[in-house]
Image (cartoon, rainbow, N blue to C red; front, side):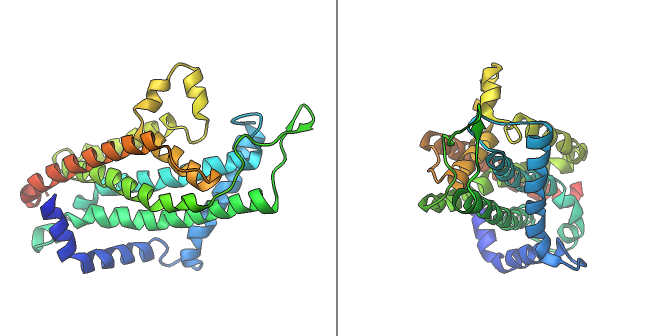
Length: 284
């Protein structure tokens, strides 16, 4: 792990250039450019609200409005998209950059790192849209919930405040967790190239095992609470929702559990990656 930190410090300029280039490349050739990073979360917000609350009539509780449910879904999906995109891209990043790894002395360990950083920066835009939605529905246009014809207040009113200071901590832990998985899969993909194709299926299953489009209480009511207890992404997304939507601090036991898992995953990933690094040119 110390070797990795030394490499990142030594190659910080290269790392910055890779992140900057990746952010620009996301929308190169587009007339709207970086503005698409704002449009996509807005489109997602309206689509989720329409499909899941108007068509499927999904409501997480009788005291939650359609607008609140849409924001719950949006806040979950922006975190999940950042995680899934990074894991998927990291899995194949060594193969995609094999010319650099084979022909020059290139620090391959920075490849998963720049993908994580780029994805987290892009995720911040989605968070900003979520906070604007919370501000609109909480203070400017409060949603109305009707139960049996009577107006009912939400059990947890929307809003945010000083608890936003927890966002950097959550993002740091998310980066550790995602990076550890990225290091492991990127190196393992060189031994078995089917990993890159398999990871898409695994991420799809993992997404629907995580309460993003449905409330966690349904899982508990069906007797599958153990799924939530072993799902680190549920812990992370639930913590983000507490901070972004309700102005609450994340639950300390949940954060402690996720931090422990993230550090273990990161340590295992770095160790496996750095031990296999000398073999990368031959495997490519």
